[in-house]
Image (cartoon, rainbow, N blue to C red):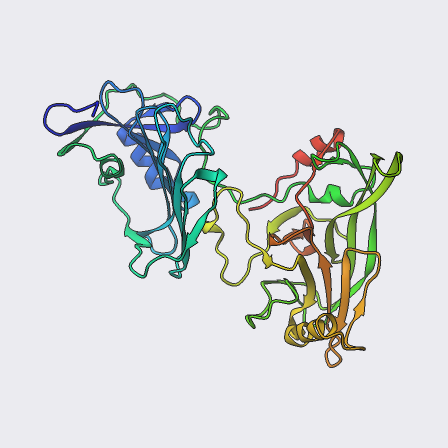
Length: 440
């Protein structure tokens, strides 16, 4: 293989503030001492491993302890990423969770990086021992096979010291042994600041962000969902109220029969709160009527607590949800395979869920009521506590995040579920919404 330096393999090690994904090159080199200081402080930095004389690195290690993350990426001679290992630092400072692996096995040197036809596989692992293994032998264009991890699957590994990280690419690429690491001859940058890094530089993975949720309930705001070039927000529709005497709001799939309770709960003031729908109006040329047609559609449902608007947003979390485990743009929320969700009083969850099933599945009279001409579908009420459940439709199955909006005082102001994806805000409103920073 190219890069053999006599017996064994010599690999140069260098440090930098960031890694430019497009250039496949480090940005602002660091001295070993400066990198060590950033490691101790939990600040992001990268480590590159390169065979002398080769432009493409063997491996890049991307570190950000403040984000509980270490990523290991291996490259081939064409500069294509072939292997990834995603490690997470959780509660035990001495070990790391092997959160995710991904591999790409290119059929030849002419195949582009991440080509849809490239065979690929990976793992998804969690601290409780659960997870999945997947394989796409024909790439993203073929079928995916998913299995459970074996009992002996290694979820955890010891956290190496700063100076003792192994070179994973030595095994992934089968480098001739022994592998000798030596410091690269680089000139460190004078500025230790990533604020000016190019947009093409790596950053730690971020969970999905809420987007400008307030715009969905602000009449006159113009939106686009990609399919409709322009939609206009109209006055939100209030669809009754929800009684939550326990002070604990449940958001979940109403017909989840596993008996584990609601997917997640949000503390709210005990009492009755307004239920609303965010509405948009769409004008388009209808093929069937041969003319201009106006349609009103629901973008989101929300439970509104009081009159104060949300000043910040956060993702609602279930009892076992740990945001440190999320990969890029991933969400926690409630799962549905029936395209429905609900707001409910968690204090009467079991009773309300049973009533919902009796109404929908068995068709028993008097145990629930249908809601007409709305994204909200039905209501059930617990006779003892007065707690209620109101179910709503989504546009499909999957996981739906629950966004909790807090007022400037930190109190829950609203709870929102998008029934589809987040549209794009158009015009001057886009600049206004861009200034609002959601909380993680």
